[in-house]
Image (cartoon, rainbow, N blue to C red; front, side, top):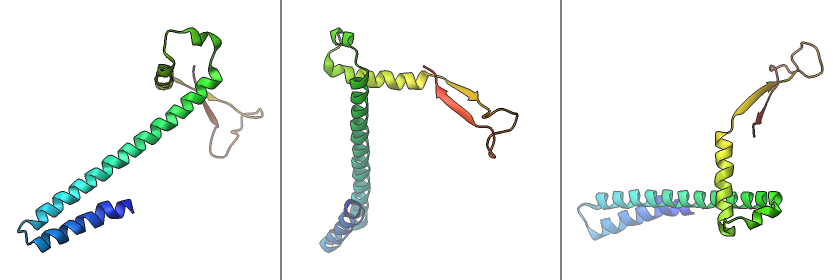
Length: 127
């Protein structure tokens, strides 16, 4: 319904209103309203995606902190409300700046390739 309202209903309502008002530049005003509706819809969509991503990140980092919290971390000088965003930044920077190591394994001896599609390659992140 949101797409229908933003892309069809509001622009068509504007076209009808400007035509009934007898404006000479009805198409300009209708086009401006259409462009503004598309822009507003994209801004709302981007905000919804951003909020959902932030909430998911918040939940994942909170779960990670609960599982890996150590007793000596409570005595740090970092306030409790600031630990979550700082830990999220630390995790993303660690993931971004860590390298990858390619390891190849042959399964069950011999020189035969274990699968028909080629040698199985396993990747793991370095810590």
